Length: 151
Image 1 (cartoon, helix red, strand yellow):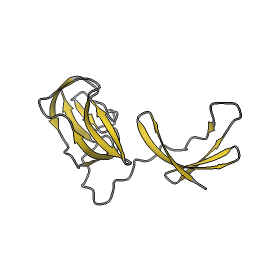
Image 2: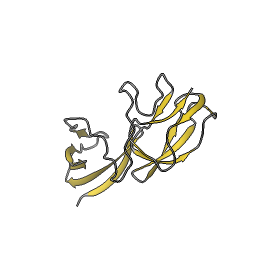
Image 3: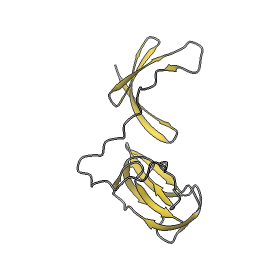
Image 4: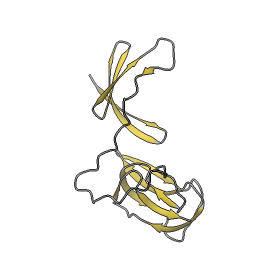
């Protein structure tokens, strides 16, 4: 019988199907299966990595069109040289804690997103003043979509 589990890895949440047969696990993620061998008396397991990077999560039907993604040089959740803060993952904006003119500190939660039925804090990666908020509560955003500008 396959069970579903959720876990967080480097700030991203994943849901995988897990089926066990003796010392072997079969993990299913986004339609692909991965074989894992459990080793006796050891903490780590051998995991066969996916052959290709995982695709972006699909946007729910009925969602508004997505804004243009930023250039690839800007890692998700970071501020680029223009001060733009980008979404760390696809989700829905649940709460915006600051507005234009607010002073923020590095690490301060500036908004909360909901992704996979979980609240995700979006912290400010730098100190500065909020110049613009590009989204509103209820908006569906894609990973790497601009959320606000901090200068």
